[in-house]
Each structure stands twice: as structure tokens, then as C-alpha cells.
Length: 99
Image 1 (cartoon, one colour):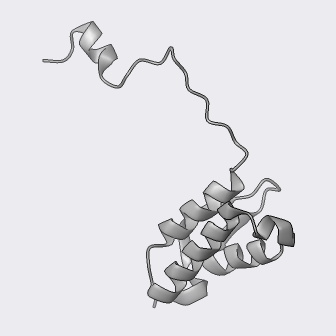
Image 2 (image 1 turned 90 degrees about the vertical axis):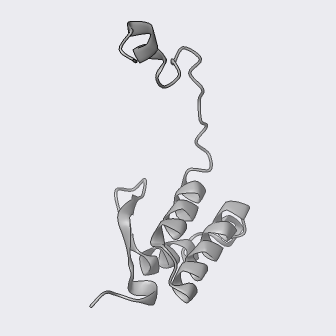
């Protein structure tokens, strides 16, 4: 029998900076409630909370809650564009391997 509600597991655990992992929806909810109130009020965490509740209440895919948590955890990570990277398929076209 599979777990329901807050006991449902993520397909892939959510790694935390301290080495711990969030394995279930309940773990993610507990983690968020232990954050300082100011952090809990940030838009990213509010979105993560909303995603968690929707997944729990409507039995949605746990991936939605995982994405919300990952976006909140990584809100300070800047994505860097590499202008030297070739577009997908360009390498093959240049080498003449595409027919």
C-alpha cells in the first residue's frame, strides 16, 4: 500500500545545505515551518507552501512540491549563461554527422 497525504515520498530527495535531505512532503512542511517567520513570508516559500498543500489535498504529483521547494532553496543561486556553448545539434552539423 502506498503512502497518502503528508507521508508521500518525493521521487528524488531534496538535498539541504547541511547534508540532510527532505524525503517526504511532511519533511518539507516541517522544514518550512522551522524557518524564521521572515523567510516563510518570502514569495518563493509561499509558493512552495502552496504547492505542498495542493499536492497533499488534491493528491497531485509530488514533483510540483519538489520544484517549489527547490526554487525556494535556490533563490539566491544565479544562473550563468555561457556564450561559448554551442546550441544543441550544432556540433553534429559541423562535424557532418547529421544526415
